[in-house]
Amino acid sequence: MDCLFCKIANGEIPAIKVHEDALCIAFSDIHPQAPAHLLVIPRQHIASIAQAGKEDQALLGHLILVAAELAAKQNLSKGFRIVMNTGDDGGQTVHHLHLHVLGGRAMHWPPG
Ligand code: AMP
Ligand code: ZN
Image 1 (cartoon, rainbow, N blue to C red):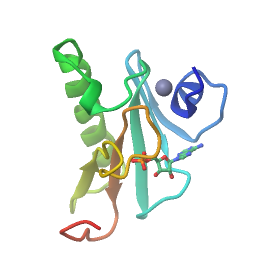
Image 2 (image 1 turned 90 degrees about the horizontal axis):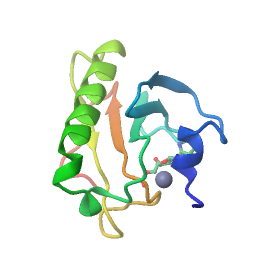
Image 3 (image 1 turned 120 degrees about the vertical axis):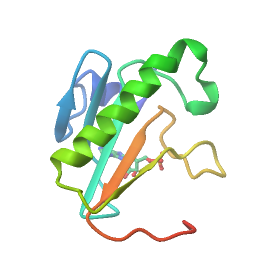
Image 4 (image 1 turned 180 degrees about the vertical axis):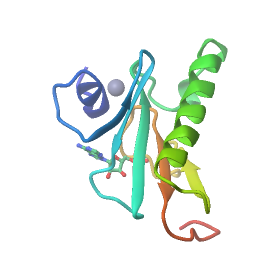
């Protein structure tokens, strides 16, 4: 399958990795939207949260906890934002489920 994030997960395409475990990897976003901008992705290809099922429940919980651990490691004690863009209206451009972890500046609401 021609999936950018599968290729990053299997090492075919390089990335600045900040975390790896049996279920997921995390790396720096190539176009950071905040001083800290990480992506957390499952090793398994799931196109988006809209395609995830009950069988993915533990994996999805793991991704969120890893995101929070990475935010703590990056000293984002003032806060951070976890975002999961989904589908065209959600602004998803890479169709492999991922969590954005953004921090290091105040975020705006509502988002654009
Ligand atoms: P989304 O728009 O939610 O699908 O997010 C995809 C994200 O992947 C964007 O923030 C991109 O900047 C990021 N991205 C695209 N290609 C790469 C890459 N090769 N390495 C790291 N991040 C990437
Ligand atoms: Zn993939």
